[in-house]
Length: 373
Image (cartoon, rainbow, N blue to C red; front, side, top):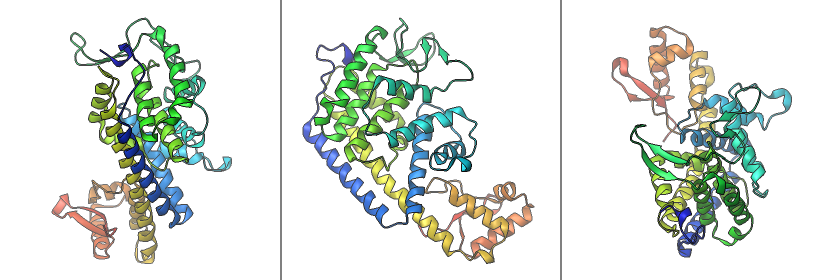
């Protein structure tokens, strides 16, 4: 049976000690973040926060199989912190919408959760494709689903699908969501913070109140719950960690939505991901500082414009690791130079200690920045 079919639904239970343990570990990791932020210049801590917000927007969409352009997302989020005359145009409404959701979670995390707020979030992640509302098979984005057919999560061929989960009938959604919102704003405050966030996300996904966009809205609810627990906007990207564990994430959600309302395994799994995300934020802060120190240490007068352009581009990448590195072909495309010039420039950067080879054989030679890692 699905949990929403059980007599005691939605009376979730969990091991109190497990909830308290992960909440304690989350606070300890958050304290380390505050310590890391205090010892770096404000502009670098702001850059780290921007990187984390961009990652959150991109990865919460990636979990749903939607690939966004990093530059569009970064511009959308950066515009939030700029004066009107400094803002740049963002043409992708999907990138703009998910960025707006991430920013609203950060800015308004203290505000009560309401049906109207959830509807707004759903509209942001399912943007309108031009004039008029977005029409799907069941109605309009930004309202509870109303179709009479079962809301199911399936995979496999159309003629023989595998049903992973079935949500409550649409006629039950308004009442279910009112119950959820009331619990989130009131009763849930007595729970250990990580357990509250875990249950809130699971409960919302179990009701699955929208035709589309449930995952992204549900993860935003989890972000709000973690921010409320910490008493400050997130300096982490939970979605990045969930995306990394995407298969296990879905398996854990599905397991927690069947047969029992004891969600201790889900609280433990989710708590581990929250701590992982917080510890990952510390790594992002440290990486931003490393990049800044590396840039400041360069003798730029000893480098040509092409080489400086390459270094800027590589330092601008979000990931702390340059997995693909740079090779002569990519350098040619980036700087519009000849193959011979590309090879010479890269070899000079290696000789000067700017780049280090990660694959040194002939035409397959690739390099990464020597950041001292």
